[in-house]
Figure (cartoon, rainbow, N blue to C red):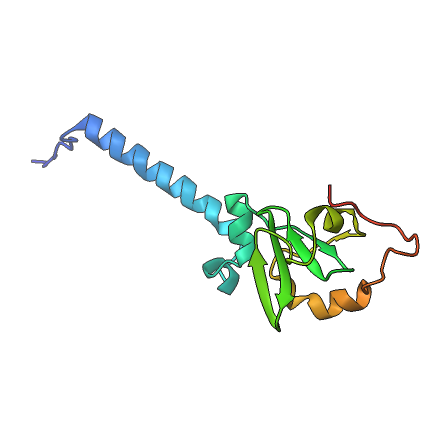
Length: 140
């Protein structure tokens, strides 16, 4: 006498759904194998990375004659006053906006605080930069 057990799937529709879902998850996870490894920058994005994702990447124009930076993305002016860095919606009180915008300027290629770059920027673009007819990048 042979014993034959009949194998049956209790709910074929549920089994098919579960199997399909499992295969989909497996396929998605296989795509992760070639992705870059997580490191500190993955867990702690820089300010520039966050701003780029949010679409608000800062860009600056520097006016050497006045040592003033204009954050064109936020329409703010950054400059030193009394030894401290100041950020405000207008240039320093002793400089008219029209005069500032008409003065020689150069676009900066950093997207973080100007105070971090200012010593090098001052050497590259001294106060009299651009007044001798050298090429000037316009802020507009």
